[in-house]
Image (tube, chains in turn brown, yellow):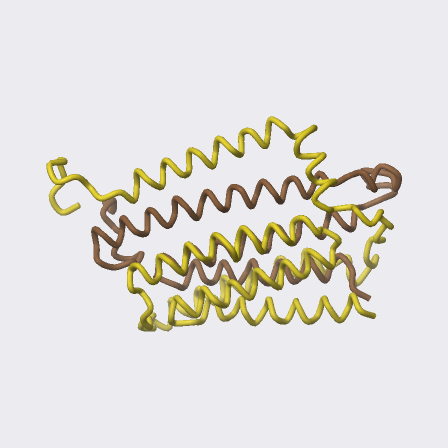
Amino acid sequence: MIGLYHFLILSGVLFSLGVLGVLLRRNALVVLMAVELMLNAANLAVVAFVRYPMFGDGGIVNAQDYAAMTNGMTLVFLVMTVAAAEVGVGLAIVINLYRQKKSVNIEEANALKG
Amino acid sequence: MVGAFFFWIFAFTAFFAGVGVVASRNPMHSAISLVAVLISIAGLFLALHAEFLAWILVIVYTGAVMVLIVFVISLLNLDKDEPIDYTAARRWGMAALTMFIAAFLVYLYADPLIGAGHPAKPPVPDDWGSVQTVAIDLFTRYMIVVQLAGVLLTAAVIGAVVVARKPEQNEEREPGA
């Protein structure tokens, strides 16, 4: 039987893969893609929590109200908006970096290093 | 059970494509793997009855964002293999840190899995999570938030244009910048 925790564990594993990508890779574009992976893993956790709410003692809603409740989806929609904005600005920065360094290796982007 | 079958198909695709994003030496292969991850996550959204978000994910991410990324990869001619020359200490340190984060997250989530079991999945009407129900929320209760999201996107577009434009010839440039 598939339940909430299956989705949450998958979300955690995908998030960790994104962390590994950000730490390990030096191509700025791949780092950007790994950040996207992390954002989408978090979105998956939110949508799973929307579908499997906690009722009862520690609960937040009753079953009647739940049917009319899609607030979590609004949150995910906004996360996607922010992610789209982030990719737009991030790619502009990558293009600018490439223009200055002739490479997108993030270890060469050390102009602000003390 | 059909739901379980869908979950495992999409979960395994998402996992192995996620490994592909991180492990591919060619950025183009990473991008294609990321498209596979996103389509799998859209499938999981459908399994969670979040129809609107599933289509938005496919349209916005695989349709717009990934095309942008692939376009930049082609534009900058980055379609080359990246040398793997990390020191062993760095590689194992990062792998250990990531394994720690993964173990922590899985522990956090899997703890109740052993004890209390899954929370119930309450029945919902057929149109729950459809474009209509989410849109009613977005354009009534969260109207201000939607407007602010529009402002954010406008600011991002202007910022991207300013950052990515070619510097003018007579503009003062710092030496070495």
